[in-house]
Image 1 (cartoon, rainbow, N blue to C red):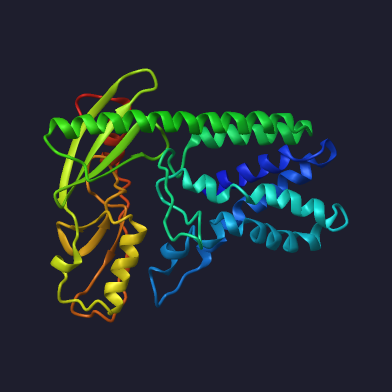
Image 2 (image 1 turned 135 degrees about the vertical axis):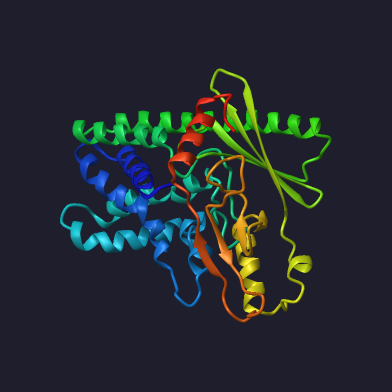
Length: 336
């Protein structure tokens, strides 16, 4: 999730564990602890452009790292707060604030190394977007009320409502997945891999991605909270296969390893951008849910296999794209 929401979750968690006289100081401690795991965004290298996407949401988000991450935050804050709280109490609040950072990110489709070092899998349950205003608002209101009233009951209620919203997101994902399977069957196809994920900021409009006979297919599916599913057919693209598409690149080369890293980050759902054959894109994300217009990708040069790939962003915030996204979200039938 976004940094602000992570901080709010940490704040409400700490508030929930605070005594009445501690609620306000616990709010700040929890907020700082909640965003601390995302300090891994600072892991960057000009020489290795993929280092950041490899280590963002990595070890600092692991469940096994939680006690150590909380301890680091405690040691940093101890010099500021040692006259107001005992070390044990401070650690308790940082532990509450830190403990769900990785779990919350696992609810998104971006993926996080939740079980590192036991597993290198990027856990992604894909039931909420990385930015969701409703989820954020629930935590924000709860944290403010708990802070002003100096009472943790609002934090309890906020956490309950946030969990309820996540449950609703899961229900929506199941509805979308069931509908997607029906559509795939009607096309006479079988999904070898199927991923459904919410689009930015909502749990109404979803992106369906599936693999069939070496190609990737995307569709936009709108599922209202009380209305049935609505399909906006999308596109297809050939899935990238290095042994076929870049057979001349040595397995031991820097470029081959970069492609492998990008593929792991993208859950293997990568393809060559049709209009730019030197660009590999992450098919999971797009500016519109029924197209392959990418949000990011890597630029490769097969003639220089010992050079790192370049990481590029391709976000399209044009008026036309925004209007089409809103039309899909509202369920209009005149979307082209």
